[in-house]
Length: 225
Image 1 (tube, rainbow, N blue to C red):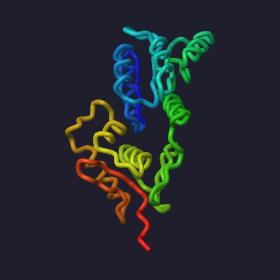
Image 2: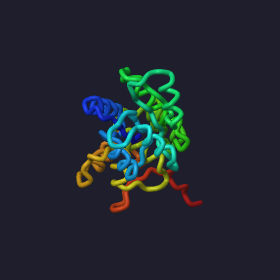
Image 3: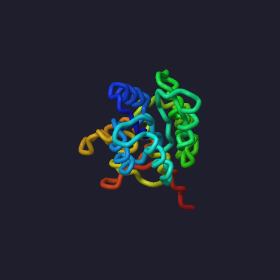
Image 4: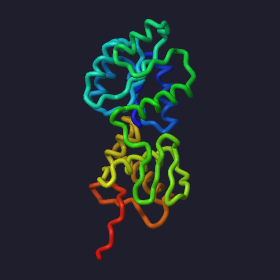
């Protein structure tokens, strides 16, 4: 899941970003509305955690801009304005949820995950390919009924490959979906993570690699009769 945190209080923004990353999300940050708008033009996000009172471009205007997009991200408005009128106003701008500061971080995580599931373009809850089954909500994965003990990044790589199946995903596409904008595109991070994932999935191998093309998981071809 890729999330954009838009918050001008840098200490709070950085805490939210690190906390969401610890939950396995790929998270970018913008400290003002103009930078957020630029990131939204470049990257595809599933959820935007949006402060309302932003410099550069007000959060209300940014929220309206987001709601006008095709296949837009879901918006969680995060603000200190807590009156009923403020909540109604925020939701009226197109926000999908509203959380008042100060907040409990576990609640923020639950709301972000709930918004991702509610997104009209969200994928099916259970992903099943080639004997693998992955549940993004319960954060569980099995192969032929055997539980897979995966790290956060291994789980997200597996989820990305299963969603894309039977198509290939390039290393660049995996880097964009699973890591954040600060990931170095010239490192071997993706190859190392896929290698660890292969070992945990066991035999027979289910991840196909084609140099310069990428990785994929697909149902095995039926034998010729």
